[in-house]
Length: 379
Image (cartoon, rainbow, N blue to C red; front, side):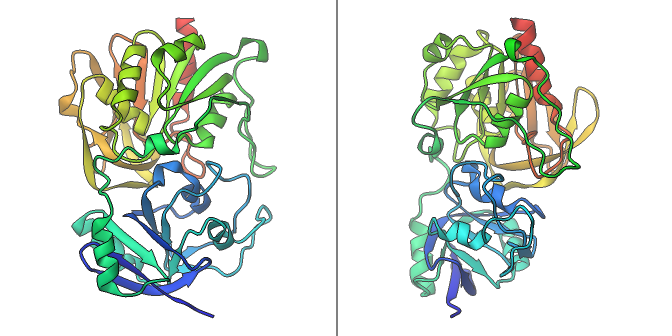
């Protein structure tokens, strides 16, 4: 039986379609991702906590889901919006339907809508709150519910998705097919550098990349103090991606500020924003965010253009940074927003995009080796 479903935005705009998988309801900020592949990684990226995701590629679910492609232990999206959801999963690595994967966590899927019209609306009006439901179809009720959802600005979501306990991560990168070549780590087992990774919603592939580059990784909760991190005697500190607004993370920012100058630091995505705040900068919300795997970024140090994977709704304001102490290293060529910076006096650097992306371009994987070199130089 086909069940009707609806996506209603806070401005009252309604898109009707049909439910796939679980009959459920989800609420959150509605954003769109332009990637052609990698939907399971999107589902399980904790950075999407609090968000309903619209996938612009029209045919989703055709290669199913499997235990190896998840970026965390469970899906974090609040709902999924697609043009067409495949009833057939055909891939040698698939172990279940992607719809069943989401249904197991009561995450609603709405299919059969004009995602092009929806994306145009979001590009013009900006990301907005919405509700996707196959349980309630009254537009006025759903629009009112959407308007009661807390706005993304001011929300500390990173603390909620962070690990509650410290743990060790040991898994490196694995080839997805016999033809894919994955190099072993650069450092022998007896010489592995110790990285303490702050979990603000960390993706598994970041941890895999650190291990592949010869690191021993200890993951700690986002509220771990600087003193506790230093007691672990790390060679370097990593600050992860994560969801929500960076500005409410005042306790985390204070801890990171205390670590600057004490240990080499590398930050990605929300980690980039937290470092910006720790160094005296400010952040702002983008109109509809950057979510996709083909965003061009220019490396200001080399002049080369990198094609990058991105997933963020907030940015560091470059005009708020002290350029005497901070050097801009990467700029987005679509809208000129800040994509990376480094300290001129301390071994600290960060990027807004995702060099660990899989699927996605590998143009920026060199950043992990740069982190290794910083740690080796400081040892």
